[in-house]
Picture 1 (cartoon, rainbow, N blue to C red):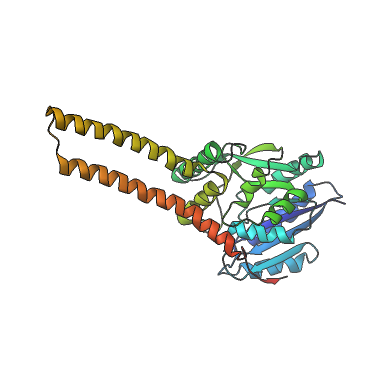
Picture 2: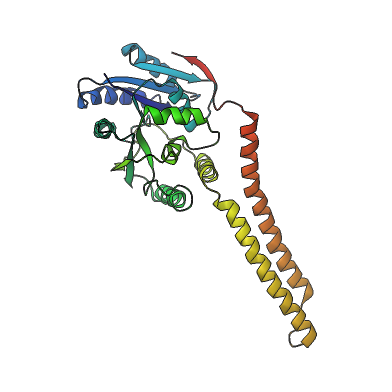
Length: 308
């Protein structure tokens, strides 16, 4: 009898959990009768009553629900990794606790898994969000697809179903400061892409802040692309070539006297340009160096306080 595991990170979701658990249990009816279900709910250091609501869910479904309480807030992607460590399903689904991604799409994704596909992606075609949120998200996913992971679908994805084999690979990699969902795409397995519209959040307040979005962008970019490092080399070569041409021009102007050379202004412009490039380059290199140091320290991605 196949088992499907839901991996659901929760952070300040006390208002969502009652609605989400009802939707999940109701959604079981859309699957074949021989499927069993496991719900791995991860409390990522919530400061509200999320854990209490999760415990109620477990009391109502003691055989299906597993709760992992982290000692603090380690971020949704590390919470997902914690859930993967405790998943026992033959296939797994990563689902947001706020129901912005539709659970009723999962039975169709499960059908593709039965046909032998080990990765099934639900691809966001439209988003019921503000203009600025759409611009930020579309830019993020465009750059990731263009410069980092060329095999991800346009518009990105959060809702994904994957085989136990892929889950085991991600757990074994145990990478720090990365995007575990996109790491599934990095494994290069063939996948099918199902389009959908991501809903507007109806209940509760999102804790997905701008700073967290920026960190995710940097983590995703640095984890899957060497483009920033290559860009430093290219820009350095271009600036070097332009500096050489400018040097020739200054020498020519000085010798011929055709054009007066204003030393202070010219030196300051070149100095500021080169200095700003150096600081940007150091910042980019520093991101890679810091991640290498963080990996070398071998600290855990998360700390589990208790498992229910």
